[in-house]
Length: 56
Image 1 (cartoon, rainbow, N blue to C red):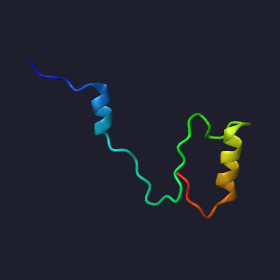
Image 2 (image 1 turned 90 degrees about the vertical axis):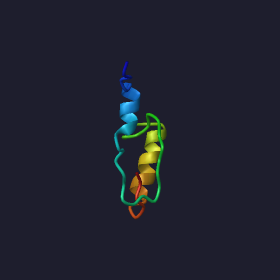
Image 3 (image 1 turned 60 degrees about the horizontal axis):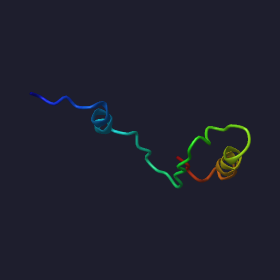
Image 4 (image 1 turned 135 degrees about the vertical axis):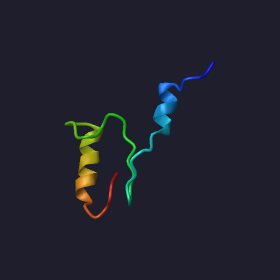
């Protein structure tokens, strides 16, 4: 009997996209892309306020 890979193990085998250079990595849950109000507002202000910094 041969084991078939589960969808989860297949997803882990797929290479993730990589950025060539990042100054700041923001790990956000349900706050960006911009949605009016709350956390997404200040995240948007930070990203737009520091154009010299590379955010990912």
